[in-house]
Image (cartoon, rainbow, N blue to C red; front, side):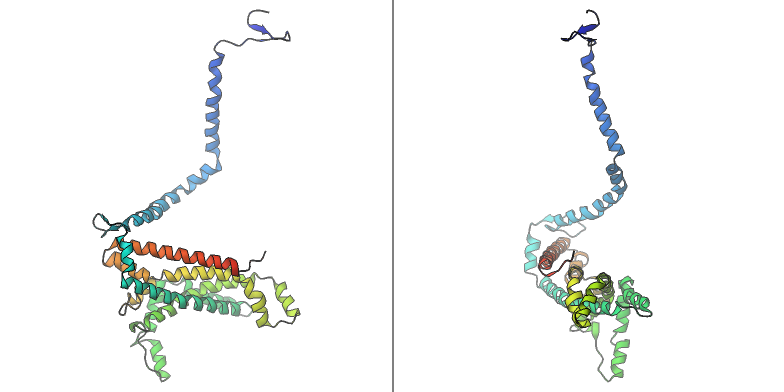
Length: 329
């Protein structure tokens, strides 16, 4: 057969390929691109990124960018009002020879070693006491948590009045009991421990709520089985409940440690690092270097050393937790 049709090997006529049909091979590519673009526009991922893009931009501008820029500043002599001078590792080397920085690290460690155990075991005791059905228990739980939502500044001012060496209520009560008045925040030997009291009072309620939730999550059947086996309430707590609180305890140890190593607000409001520098902890010393002495390069070096110290300590705590903490399925 001739003309517009061609014959195959089987003798069946088929349409002949029109002229210029090879040029239409590009059409599927344009269609493929169009379909990819359509799928992208219809994708939930694109919609999700569009929704979170304002937050991503804000975090990038005010979170990531300052972190990167401060890292650059840590290698400079920078006074914040002029362009910095590159000095390499000089700021980090100076940290090793700075007695004021060493003293601030020592005070921070002392504060942490006292604050964390008191808050941890104190909150556990309070949580156990609140883990029962009594009249007015909701009021007691709310009262314990109230200091957590109270402004740090308000808390600091309240304790400044309570522990005022001349007009404070605490000294008035001590005198009523025949005891000598104390200087509290104005005594270099007492100021840091008074800060411990303020921060324990302010953060105890948070740990209590976490422990209370964990206690209420322990199956009642386990305690009933221990009671059937003849275990006393005290023994059942230490042999049944306390091991099951391991993950909660690990979380609180890590969280309280990080919080303690970054102590600043109470120091700034109450003592301003005094008296005689007895409450100058690492973060307050960093603040002084940056905004009192305008030594921003040195201050950012302190910040990154503190960050690395917290990171290393947290990793150690988590690794220890893997060996000591029991996770129930």
